[in-house]
Image 1 (cartoon, rainbow, N blue to C red):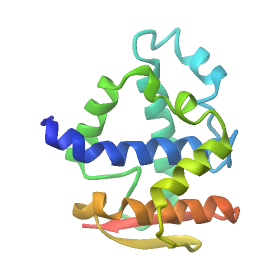
Image 2 (image 1 turned 90 degrees about the vertical axis):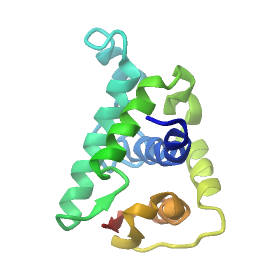
Image 3 (image 1 turned 120 degrees about the vertical axis):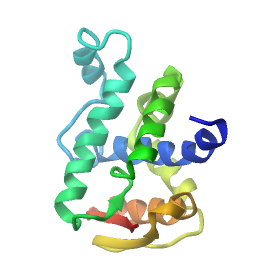
Image 4 (image 1 turned 60 degrees about the horizontal axis):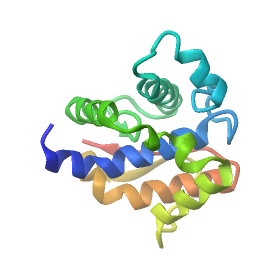
Length: 167
């Protein structure tokens, strides 16, 4: 993966981490996983002793992907299902990430994570319930504030929203 590609995808990865953390059962319970809880890490370490943070990331991403896929049309993209080239680059980025990039270390709790999501959303006030069209997947980095805003609105109103992108 080229350095410029990694720099462009880092905000996508950070948004994934944040929404993935907030969607887990200990925060908003959109998916029934606890990979970013301390017990989740302890569960994964015996099997993935060298890469538990990668296993945590992929576990949460798969749970989020399944929920989003259930609510969106086939052929659409979303934060947790992107074109294969982007997915591969994100995987490489996760493998090279340091331990301090773990969501549990970054956000510690639900309120800290919501504050971080509000910073990502900035002044954007896009919201709604259910599937919400955002734009084209080729412009995903340009749409991250809108995506963050949709998730912030959903988490704040105790509703589920699924921002999606088209090809």
